[in-house]
Length: 126
Image 1 (spheres, rainbow, N blue to C red):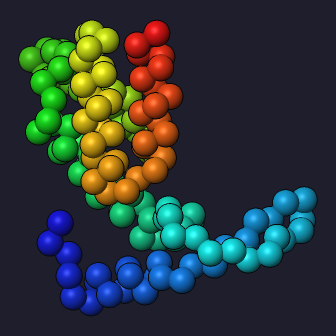
Image 2 (image 1 turned 90 degrees about the vertical axis):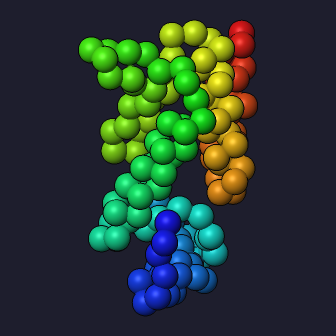
């Protein structure tokens, strides 16, 4: 992405050695370490999430050819907040998009997307 210098150092320091706890019914759990996700409510989180989503869109655009045409606009992905919808006219096209998303998740070590691939594949193929 071309991010370096002070900004990269700042982000790294924000997310190194993160300790979290869970609040349930007014009680706090013990603190535990976490090395995944973004901070909820942190001012930089929406920006970093948007950069991540933009990258997924670019990856899909470069690696699939299964979009549907709506008024001469190719649509293969819909994004809103933290939701995403893959679009294709065929099961094979949807599977191709899902496989591409899976490859992306492997490249960036996104375990949530790996589990999603398995869950969706069962439904697309069945």
